[in-house]
Amino acid sequence: MFTSTGRRLRLSPQAEELAGYAQRVVALNDEAVARVSALPRGDLSLSIGVSQQFEPAMPELLSSLTRLLPDVRIALRTGLSTPLAARVADGELDLAVISDAPRGSRDRFLGRVQLAWFGRHLIEAGTPLPLALCAEPCNLRAHVLNSLTLAQVPWRVVYEGPDLPGVRAAIRAGLGNTCLPANADELWSLRRTPEACFPPVDPVPVSLMVAAGVEKAVIEAAHRAAHEALRCLPFSAEGFPDVSRLRSA
Image (cartoon, rainbow, N blue to C red; front, side, top):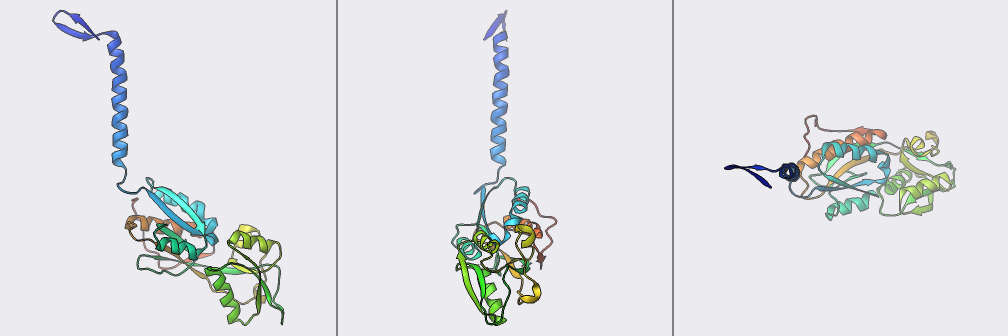
């Protein structure tokens, strides 16, 4: 390792080469320690649910969340709004974007999505309108049936399934009609029914449901990301706060 030159020692050529490797090992160790120390403390994962009505918004939602929360691992789940809200309440999900009004003090109202009728059938006097719907519990189902009840339009369910992809398949097959986001003809190539032939349907409220213990900075980031993502739908924001100075968590 050393070469003697009188009273002084110097590194041998082999030792000098080894010292270079040692310096690189130490530098890599310091880099690893600095990286781990810089990460936020606590849980680095974020589980978020998205209603199947808002599937087209998921790419933008993930992109925005990754930009606003770069050190957080995102886990996304889809489903119907009512089960997603229940999973948030039980703490199985941190957040969920659903078609419903806020339920708790920490939930955030995002706005409303305009709906329209889709399908091949028309309303005929004395003939129940065939419907394709998700099974209970489903907020959209209740919204559709409420609109028909108020308009005194008779109806019958010809297709009932566990999710919206199945409902959309039933619409394409001509089994029945239903309500979906008003640009579903562009999103999923569904046939839109003439507006004059069907009762008007109110826009559905959209909210960000928040589980207990989620940090405020994460809520604000998800709120902003959801707001940006929903623009791909016929979405009107209401009461959205100024988050132009939002910092990543």
